[in-house]
Length: 231
Image (cartoon, rainbow, N blue to C red; front, top):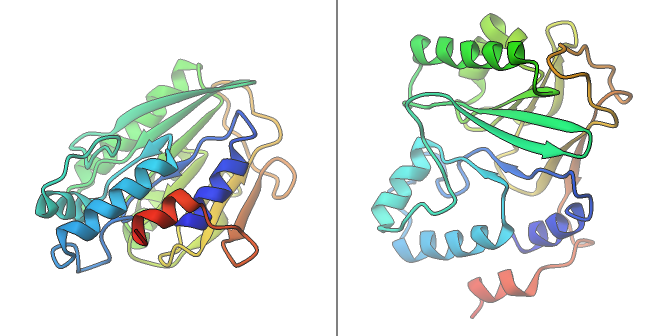
């Protein structure tokens, strides 16, 4: 985490950078009730210093917070309904749809999520429609098969494999999924935004550049983060 902080500080030198956490930062699968409250408290202090622009909790994270008795703060969700969050960048605006999560497959929730994305695109105000999911790979894949055309990018998390970038639906959707070990940061660079309301077909390594940056020993550790875990 201390290396992630250093990486984020460098990334923010670009004012258009939006840093997103998609869930499961606090809750290893099946262990959300087993971590001591002091561990969750230290993790939250450290993650708050990372300063995510969008910080979405999975249901497991919410359980971990409740068990530790700490307030959510900047960490939002899980939601019962899809949520729209917007961010202005230099050449336009981005629409992030935060996926609701009941903890299980829910066709009604999934239909509402796609409907919101379709409505936002019809508004013609946003250059990209980006989904942020805590559903896990299987649910996300099923959603993409049925509703993927509503989105330009889906940032996924939860059980299943990680992907630095998969192009689906005839390259009209980029699917990125966080790796579970936290040893790399996934990024998506878009050199030029499409027109607001348009549905882009991605040209890999031209109109979009997904990256996976390893957080190895060549990335310095942030001392303020280190001090939390090594007082």
